[in-house]
Image 1: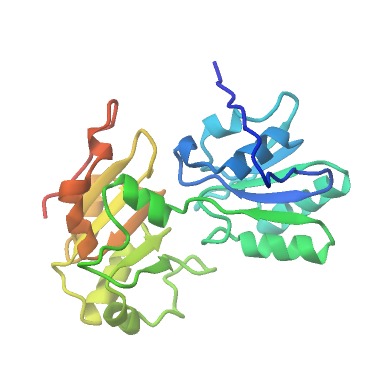
Image 2: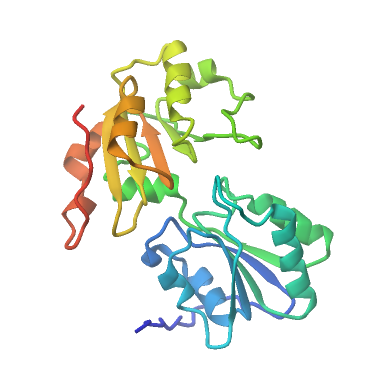
Length: 276
C-alpha cells in the first residue's frame, strides 16, 4: 500500500497553478530528502514528467488521476531527447495543466534544468525552480563522507565525468584541478573514471589519495567502494559497481571510518568496501 503524506500549510507556501511548470529536485533517492515545496507540487500536479532515477515511492505521492510520464535518459539506452522533453513541458502548460518536471538530485546541478528553464522562459511559460539535495552532498553524507571538513579542505569542486559527446571533458584543465582542489566530487563518471584518475595523477595527484565510489546513494541498496586513486580503476572493475554512482576524491574519504552511520542502519545492504 502506498502511503501518501499530507503536506502541511506554512507561511509562504506557494501553489502550483494551471499553465505553470515547476522544475523540482527529487534528491538522490531517499524520499525523505524531498523538500516541502517539492512534495506540495507533486500533490497538486496534473502531470509529472520525471527522470528514470526518481524513486517510485515519490511518484506514489501524486494525487489520484495525475499522469506520470517517464522521460528518463540513461546512458547506452534508447532515451527521449532533450528537445522532446522540453516540447512536452510546453505543450502540457499551454493545455492549462499543472506540470511538475521531477528531476533526480538538484535541477541546476548537472541536471540540465537551466536549459529547460530557458526554453520555458523563451516560450512564455511561467515556471519555478524547486532545489533538491544533490548527490554530491547528500550521497556523500549517506556514505559517512563530509564534503568539507575544516581539517582537510576549504574548497570542493563538482565535476561532470563526461561532456556532450560522452567523452572525458576536454575543456577541463586537469592540471589546475589536480593542484587547486583538495576535494573533487565526480558525477556520471563511472565509465571515464580510469582516464580521470590517470589525468589527475599525471598532474601530480598522489596515487595513495583516498577515493570513494557510492552507488545508488541514499537508497536501501547503497553500496560503497573505498580505494585509492592508483587502484580505483582495477578495484572498480572487480567490485562490479556501476551507475548511478557519485565519486569522491580527497582526504575527506578517510573520515568515513568513524562517520559511516548509514552502514549500521537496520535493513542496510552490506557495503562492498575494497581494502585500501
